Amino acid sequence: MIKYKIDVVKELSNRGYTTSLIRKNKWISEATMTKIRRGENINTSTLNILCIMLKCQPGDILEVEPTDKEKIEYY
Image 1 (cartoon, rainbow, N blue to C red):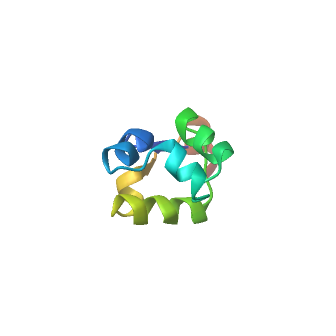
Image 2 (image 1 turned 135 degrees about the vertical axis):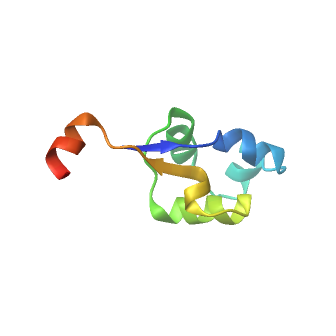
């Protein structure tokens, strides 16, 4: 299971990227912003955009924490 290590929306806001600015410039769709707020999965293109905007690497945003079911299935 992939989990967010940071509050992405808060970090974007701290860097001056408001949700209205992001929407206006069509950098990230509102549907994807909703996924981010809910902690749901995003695609690699969106992750790339976030990394550029936040000047970080994917591992600074996301972490993999296997569920018990995943541990049984894949370990």
